[in-house]
Structures are given as structure tokens and as C-alpha cells.
Image (cartoon, rainbow, N blue to C red):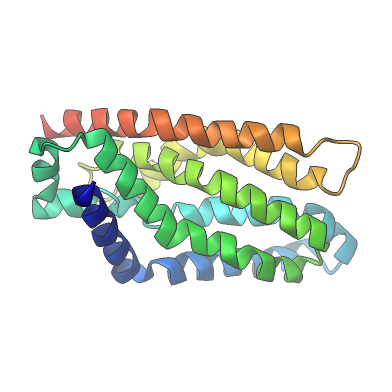
Length: 222
């Protein structure tokens, strides 16, 4: 446990230090939220209605930033070989690295979402529901992205390929995240059902993601 804790602290420091970390994701998130209303128009009712979808799409795109470096830096400096040969199961190592990446880049998106929702004229109950869905769903985005990062770890410029691989897999998370956030305003739809499915997707990603990413890392090292 001390080894995994040290790894978590190391990954947090690297995520924050390299490439802007949390600030880069939040700034990109802000750019998406600011640019979209210019294309849609000044209709506040329309922005309020589609606000959860805009925020979720922005969070999805922002979560892809830096994922290509999740294992690339370890491969470049040789520490990935040490992790592969270490006594700690590689699946736990991958899980800790993904959690550290989410804490450094995904959690700031969740924290900033209530503030950015003001730009879209969202109601307080919709903002609270959106924040809850982002908190429940963004870890799944990072864990799914970890699979793509492991598959493209041997490529020097695999960022675009990673996005192509990851985006189709994140569509269910996006669908149920937006559905749960919209259900908070539409009382004819239950909030608990899509939110429970969203939590289930995150739990499934936490189980399947580390094993799939670890298998891809082992394959790339052969």
C-alpha cells in the first residue's frame, strides 16, 4: 500500500507539473463553454435546455488532454519496464495512475462545472444534478482513456489515434450522464435510473479498464 501511495503522489505531481495539468483542462473546458453560445445564439432558454449536454461534451473533450502522456513518459525514461517487472500487480499500478490523472485533471472539471453553468443560464437543480453526474462519470472517461493510452504507448504521436479509439467507447457514459442531468428538470423522467447506470459504467470501467490497459502494456513491451 505504501508503494501505491507513493506512486499516486508521484503521478499527481507529474500530472500537475507537466503540460499545465489541471489548469490546461479547465481552460479548454472554459473555451468550449464560451465558444458554443456564439454558434448557437443568445437564446437563454435554449442554452439552459442544452446546457448539460454542452458541459458534458466539454468535459469529455477536456478529459482527453494529457491522456497520451499517461504511460508515454514512463516508457521514455524506462520506469515502465520497472513497473512491469515489479512485485506490485500491474493492474493496480494502472488503476492508481488513472486515479491520479483523474484527481489532477478530471476533478478540477467537476469543481469548475457549477461556475461555468452560469454562462449557460442553468437552474440550480440542473447544476447540482450535472455536477453529481460529472463526479460519477468522469472517472469512467479516464479509465477508458487509460486503455487507449496503453494501446498507443509505443507511438510517438498517438494523441489523435487515442481520441479515435476512446471516443466511441465513451458514448454510453455521455448518453447516461446527459440523461441523468436532464432528468433533474424533466420530472416525468426518473433521475435515479440513468444515474445508477452511470455509476455502473464507472464501476465496470474500474474493473475492466486496468486489466485491459495492463494487457496492452505487456503486449507493447514484448
